[in-house]
Image (cartoon, rainbow, N blue to C red; front, side, top):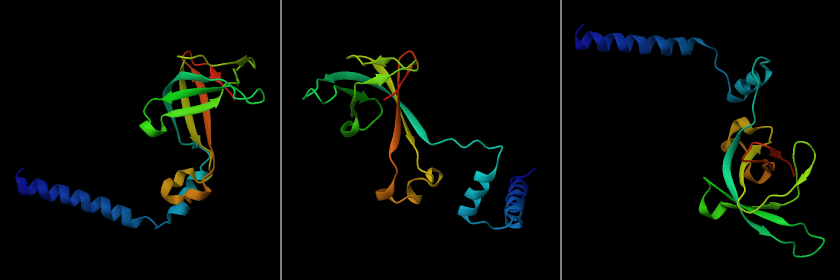
Length: 146
């Protein structure tokens, strides 16, 4: 097969794919999303990311009525957003109270709980974004809840 013949073959294949797409009915993006949401076989997952972190500071309570805080350095985040402070009053999966210790390795999971998360950042009003849900696990995989 010569070079020109192979070009003709590939252009015919591309043309066939385009014609196949043109034959399908046109559908708005919102209709496509609605169709995906109605599909019972598909299990939609919330967008999330899990990042490693290390507890590098335990901040004592400034007042007896305030809780102790744990400062976590999150790996993979920009330098200015790396530190995360949370209350150091956590519960494990058995319902027991636990506290993080300095140097403990944790995983921080950030999940988007908004209904229109499938639209991405461009589909949402930034000022009306819903809060995110965080989940902490220790190095052994034990889930710690707030």
